[in-house]
Image 1 (cartoon, rainbow, N blue to C red):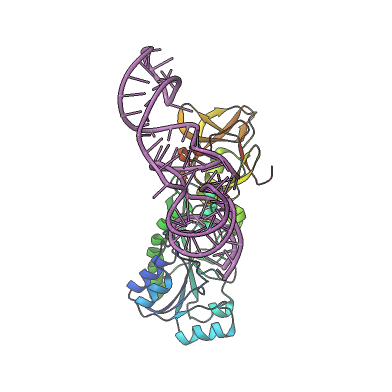
Image 2 (tube, rainbow, N blue to C red):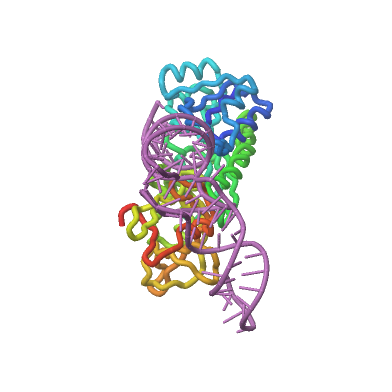
Length: 331
RNA sequence: CGCGGCGUGGAGCAGUGGUAGCUCGCCAGGCUCAUAACCUGGAGGUCGCAGGUUCAAAUCCUGCCGCCGCAA
């Protein structure tokens, strides 16, 4: 079959490479336009090789429209005369006109166990809500977001300390395997779809920076899920409040629940240490019962303008004083 | 020329014109049944680099290099 790949980012790469390795013919790549890429900064942010680079290595034509849902976009797709669109983390909703171009329409690789977590950030929201199991679903695309019939699904466990970035890295190859299987079935005419149960559908909206703000009144487990879910982007953050000093923005990059029973009268966000845990930065979190307040151990963080550091290092320069606490910018 | 923060002994920080300091680590010794323990002594910095202002600069000014955050 003649395939057009539509996708952006590291999640799409394994799928793209699997298509290229398959007997099917990849006739084009549609990906997001190049955004003005900031300065190179030594740090190795680029985990993937880039969809565009992969396409060029295989001499696949690339199309990067601001919107694919224009007459021009549809025309370009028609020129490629695809039998099927394969979509993974493309970032644009496809119009009916676009989906009507190929005779088999489009299929989407979605990183959740649909119908749960429909939307742009299924991995992060699954972790945020404390799920212990998630997976990949291949769906027939329809005009309604992530609501089409399910063509294949496979589940995996989520590690107790696994971040969204780590989980994505495991889900991407899983999706690539599934999608190739589904394409073979479509080609053979043996594919079978299963309707989604609308009643079980939940939303996983696109993340923004504001989603990173930590609410210390939630329980320790919830705060830690939040931290994992926001990693590596947009990253959980809070503000360090000290007497006589302006709030210091602090990114929290790793945190685990610390199983101690803690004084319920201590306010959420209060910073303290414990002799049983030398070098540990502990933060009071929300109540789980009137008698028990849970505690978060922050193990890695990044103060504004500084590099990422272990909690023990941070404590040397910021020894906790009475009244120091984490919280929103104003408190 | 997108905006901003920062570069001070091995680590993290304070110090904004006048003898370079704190916490941790390290070395030596002491104390203790014991403790992220405590006590004593010690090593380790040309305060990113180069100019300038000044009697005097980590501290003010200019340029450069490097690191980081935001915005994309």
